[in-house]
Length: 469
Image (cartoon, rainbow, N blue to C red; front, side):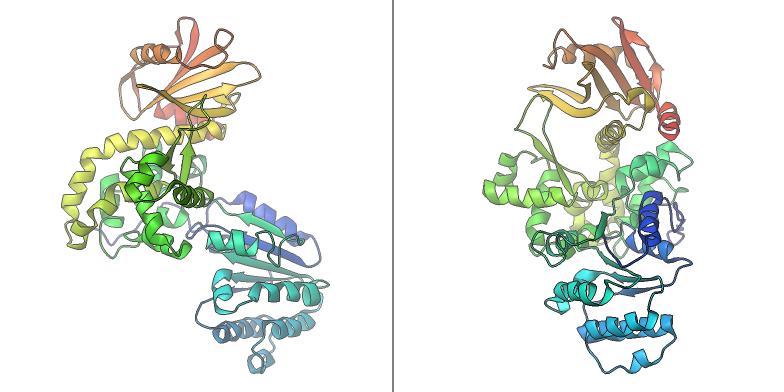
């Protein structure tokens, strides 16, 4: 079946111009520099650092949770290799402090980069390790020309224990950057076909590691079967692994995500389904929000009564379609589960398409809608509008519907949209209204409705406008 052939959609290193420019600016500024780079697992931190190190004098140490001794041994080897001084290998010391002292004395004023990746592993094997790095920076490296980069994937640890208030590095002169997944506009630059790009983004999201398993020569269902439904494949257990890495109470977070994906999206319904009180549920949800796994959606015109939705595309897909059928997949019944997914896939893609359009509007990635700065969802009782975007200054409002369908009749859709728009309470009687229909293609397009502008955006127009902007 050709399942062993993996075609990499993205190059090994892709994009990240902003991040590289940031690192290069710091590197160009002489003197000791302390940098913290972090971001969720698989987001591409290591590839970014390797690209940055290319052609420069530096070392890369991947920390482990084996023991402090093993990490010391690895650091000795790295220091010996870059200085060509074998005495580092024979040093009778089990101290990072002593090693950095010898290293700093050896390289003197040379511009050297020292990268320590997966810092949380070091913090787990040696209590007070962060205080030790503070001491190394203050007493040994402050007058050196070394650029020390501390990197980590456990986002909660990096934000609370490394960068948080009251930590040894808090308030110090350091540079930090949280590496984010690719957005849709970035991904589009690597794909030849926008529909393939959208389908890949709907399922795999913008995480570089996930995307490298996507095969553009196969249909989306075949990609799903190979990578997400086949036991032993790289992404089969990925959400579970990531949750275990981030959270001690991973079971509770898994339960919350499972019920959100099943339609229990309000705080009341979630508490009832999960058996949590409101305070505890809110605490867990806030953590998931901070880490980018879920988001809280409040409709335009309301301050509460919002819903929670899984934000990360792979997590959203996995908890919706894979997790409920783990028993079948463990027995190897891949085709049966694939059949269940295929029946609902188009409907699921409809909501995913809406989220992509929302992202495009929020990042102002289309010239026609650049003046709309606030983007919301709206619903009231039995009425719902996919997206509402505002220009507060000029009192302009855009009502948008997103349909993952072909041959859409825009005239009929805009008429329905206009009827619902009357119920949206925002600068009534003083606003200038616009309408937009986003679809795969249209059977009938219109340019205005009752004297108001209408934008019909098919996939071709979407690709052209996003790439141009």
